[in-house]
Length: 83
Image (cartoon, rainbow, N blue to C red; front, side, top):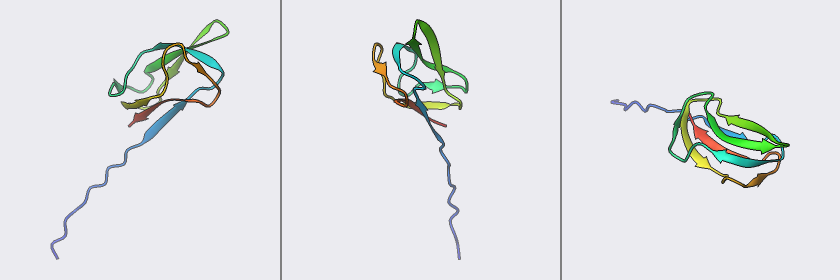
């Protein structure tokens, strides 16, 4: 019984959502960008305050769902990061 070992790779995907109504002031990454835990992906603006949006895990930005100037509602998806 010559079995072949299959290595499973678990990829954790982090979804980053807007926490409040805000506008996208600046986009700092693009799909394919390598990021470290704590890196800023975008900067939002709400009530004249700049709000950095950080990733909690290291990985690669898979998708970016916002553009500069876009208005976001609470819960809108900003980006996904593959860990």
